[in-house]
Structure formats: structure tokens, C-alpha cells
Amino acid sequence: MTILITGGAGYIGSHCCVTFLEAGHDVVVVDNFSNSSPESLNRVASITGRKIAFEEADIRDRTALERILKTHQCSGVIHFAGLKAVGESTEIPLEYYANNVTGTLELLAAMNACDVRQLIFSSSATVYGEPQFLPLTEDHPLSATNPYGRTKLMIEDILRDLAASDPRWRFGILRYFNPVGAHKSGLIGEDPRGIPNNLMPFVSQVASGRRDQLSVFGNDYDTRDGTGVRDYIHVVDLVEGHLRAHEALAALTDETNSFTVNLGTGTGYSVLEMVKAFERASNQKIPYEIAPRRAGDVAEVYADTKAAEAKLNWSAERGLEDMCSDTWNWACKNPKGYEASDG
Image 1 (cartoon, helix red, strand yellow):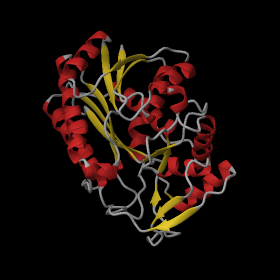
Image 2 (cartoon, one colour):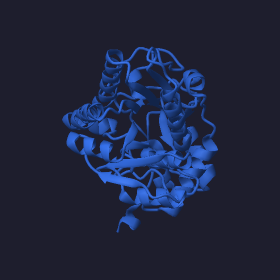
Image 3 (cartoon, helix red, strand yellow):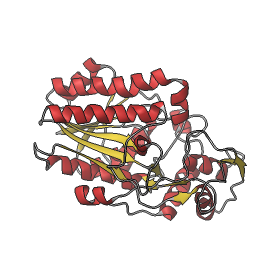
Image 4 (spheres, one colour):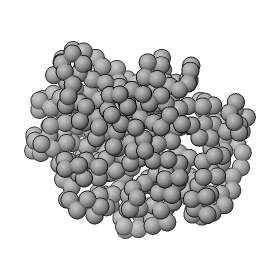
């Protein structure tokens, strides 16, 4: 049976394809390339030696999704597709609700029509809002401070309601912290369009000379060096968590037909600690300037990982050095991302 991976040409999705293909699973990717490149799937095929089934479609197209689920005889779905920039979500909220929430509703309706009721959802630590305590456990109160976070929380609620209404459904809700890094081959990695929204690709572009300097937003937080602290997780560890989640879903009973777990390392690093680590990995100086705090940013966020260890038999194995060196390897081999290969 085949696993449908929505958004499978994207950063996390492409790494997930590699992990599942190498574990012996068949996958079919659905993507509309709104924030991804067809070349990533060519690279996945190069890494795994396996050709990937691909269907270009929008997840809001229920008819297309039903056709794909039936044609490929899918047994489950891993759902990455969606818009993901916090700042942009405040500027075009309707696009975020349409893509993320409506898209998920159409996907679930298509799955229901095709009698496919197993889904792993890519959620986010943004559903915790302003931390009331650390580390963040899965039972921390839920809230969201921006439209992106609200779409993730809404989708979680939809999945919980659906699981409660019908025991045939199986849901794994995975709350990501900060995915970074790249595949060790350097063939696939994070390739943001325009100005990066996340720290690691921005630091990488400064190190490689694509950008002049890094802006560090705030150095007066109540942290060890005044800069914001986040839980960074290597993308390969993250997608291995999805493989463990897929296996765990198959073992669930009707009484416990879903689970929610954090995917993080449990360790927080500050912005300046990340900069220093990347300087060591790249042997490049990374100039930066201190800029005002960004609205909505919090001082410190990191995960409690005990639930993932217990429920998935999973924990992150790759450290900060791996995160930085693998990112730098990707940047050196692909100085313009996938652009050159895309022509």
C-alpha cells in the first residue's frame, strides 16, 4: 500500500520521502510547487534509487485528491502541504485559512470518501502561544498569536473532533519545534523563496555571501545572552519521528485512536549560540546587527520530549554540530538552492 505525502516536494516533505522510501514504503507526492521545486523530487530519486510517483494538484481540489487516493491505492496520508510564514500570515490571513484549513477539510473529505482514515499531521509549537511554563509539555494550554498558528490549532481541533466522532480514524499530531539542517548528501535541503523567514537559512546565506549580514531581533530578553532561545531539531531526526509515528498509528486501538506529541530535542539554543556554531561549521565570519524585537516573539521556547519517547520510541539523535555542518554542506553544493537545476 502507498502513503500519500502532501507537500512532499517541500523542505520537510522531501526529507520525509527519503526516509519512507529507504524504509521500504511506497509513496506518492502531491504538490502544487507554490513554495517548492520539482528538482527536489529528482534529488530524492537520486538518493534512494527509487522513482517517486508524483501528482501535481492543489489540496483544495477534492476531486483530484479522490482520484489520486484511489489510483495509487493509498493506505494513509502524511500532511505537510500548507502556507507556513508567521509574518506573511498576518498580511494575507485569508490565504492562510483557505490553504491550510480549507485544504485540510477537502483532504479529509476525500480520504473519507475513499475509506482512507490514517493521517499524520504536521503541526507546530506555535499552538502553545506564549509559554506559561518550560519545557513545553503536550498538555500546556493552547492558544495562538497569529493566523498561521491559528490555522494549525484549528486543524488540530478538527482532527480531535473527527477522532472522537468515529473510531475508524487514526491521527498522529506532531508539533514541530524548529527544523533545520539538510540530508547528509547535500542533495536536498531548505530552499526558501525570497528572504528567509527562519534563522538557519538566513545565517547560511550570510555565510555563503548571498546576504550581507544577519539581523538579530532583540538582545534584551531574559536569556543567558539576551537573544531568543529556540529548540532546533535536525530535519532528518524530525522525519524519522514521522516514520515512528506511522508505525505507532498502526498499533492504536479504537479506544485510543490518536496521539499528539512534540518533536524537538528538549534543548534550547540562543540566536548568538547558533551564529557561533555556524561560524565553526563553515569557517566563515557571520556579521550581524542587533535590531528591535519583533512583535509576538517570546524569550524562550523548548520542548518536553518524554511523550514522543514513550509513544513513538523516538528521540532526536543529531546535535547542533550536525545541524550546522549539514546545512553548510547543502549551501556549498547548492549556492542558489534548486534554482540552477530548475533552469
